Image (cartoon, rainbow, N blue to C red; front, side):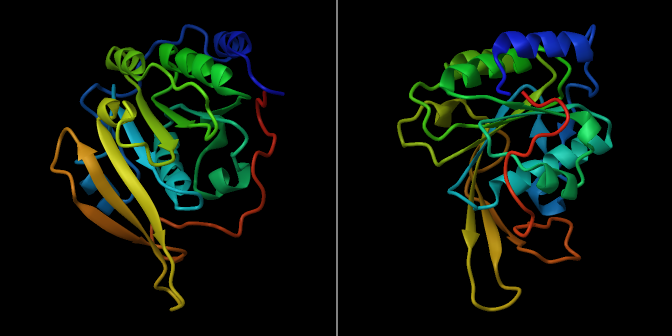
Length: 237
């Protein structure tokens, strides 16, 4: 079942009565558990800000988001994941996310996406909101309004999207913009993803790092062999 904003509000009131309590001090950051990535972000995701993860299909941005969600859930922090169907429960669980600490909200269409994002940001039950931007959205949110909502709340928004156009206002609203690309190789063990810091209000842009792909003893592991997308589980709308 697909979520409407009204259904989402009702669920939040039922599952998180009296929500509004921050689990982290305002100066704290949400870490990924990947030292090189956290260092690139000057410690992690800042509360009250929007971080943009951009890249093409299968570039690795979803796996990066899972790393942040896993680290947050290990601290018993609540995570919301907004998507249009591109959600894999096995991948999330394999990444170490405690499913009891995660609410996934599936929507259909850009209007539902905007309305449900608004509800999730207004409700202070979630320290981290991950939003998978629908690729065919006809109307973008008012990003300045989204930023104003974030500033007053102990929450970080991690937005997954295709690379924005040069004049896209999202580029200016995001406090941090990471561009993710996957580098293929015929050499075993040489395949990796590259993360470029395109924008940051806390450090100089242009820094980049490489994360190995599929290396079992590395703290960050992409798992392309996991099946399916959009499985129904927990509170499915």
